[in-house]
Length: 102
Image 1 (cartoon, rainbow, N blue to C red):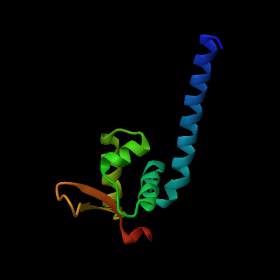
Image 2 (image 1 turned 180 degrees about the vertical axis):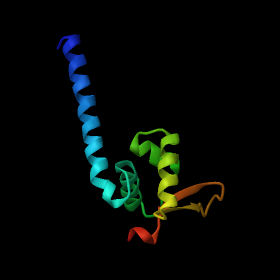
Image 3 (image 1 turned 90 degrees about the vertical axis):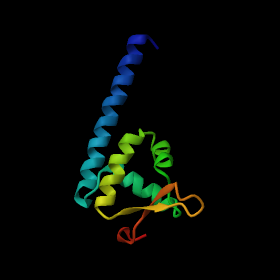
Image 4 (image 1 turned 45 degrees about the vertical axis):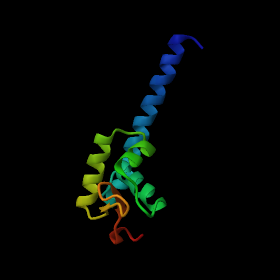
């Protein structure tokens, strides 16, 4: 594959990803969450004991700064809550609240 063809292919994939993101956000909008917020909720549902902010950012492959914003918004909606680690009170994890139904 020529370099020019590779660049076109990559650009096409980026455009497709942006379209998919827009459609996912539109799908979740009536539920009051973004697709990224939904992904965090799914991760936490699968990890009942909670996850650290770092673990969430690694699994979602996004920066910790972006995860902070997502977590803050979910916390304001009452969908998640921070909990101190029972073994080390300096560490915190995020867990779903009963408001999510899980």
